[in-house]
Length: 285
Image 1 (cartoon, one colour):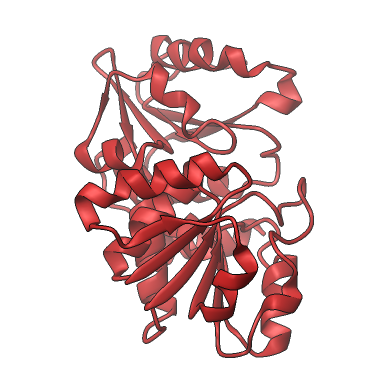
Image 2 (cartoon, rainbow, N blue to C red):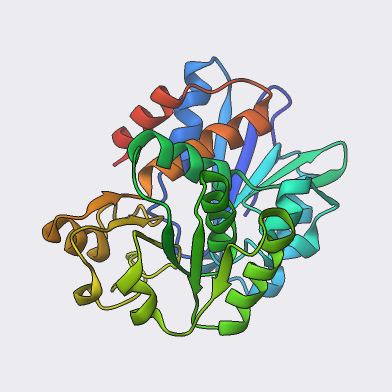
């Protein structure tokens, strides 16, 4: 399942379910080649391998024993992986979700590059977008990172909607000590959407494995901006409906690229080029 790392190479992996369409391996391997590194990126798809969720800790430990430089973690393991780690940096401690595990000197250190990846993507593509009232769908691993990112970007009022209300409440509570009471949970998405300047989907709804939209597109208004963290497909049903209405939209591609830039640097100690990584991302399509 996992291959031993070569003495002169860099081997990393991606842990998740339904990840065969991920462009992350191509981004990392092509950037490694551009920098003259022997870089191997392994998909560990728990669906394809028939692994139960309970195998997560064993897979993380095996990667460490085999000399992997690190692991990326995606749905549905960004929060479950916390129990497999030795240390979190302060920002990741607040976020409560990990998408990057650095394996070094027998330690398993958890980081979150999704958060800053979303910040970089938003600043690059959505300059001038209103952030007074933002509604976020999803409070899972990705939602925790994006919620923190929206606070960093200056969202004055963040309403969090989740299929498990308690999870949205816990995320709002985690953000409060750092950012004040600017985030709150709600069970009434229709009322929140009516007043929203912007909307972000951080749920897996819209992925090839989970088609559909996180709420009825008929609730959208042309004055709103709409973001989605899903990038396969790059144009989700939600973004297609928003664009048809005239909304400004943000796909998950930018976050995918920018989080990969930061993860690559953590794995290798080498600076990645964001423009080159974006080109690798597009080529992998």
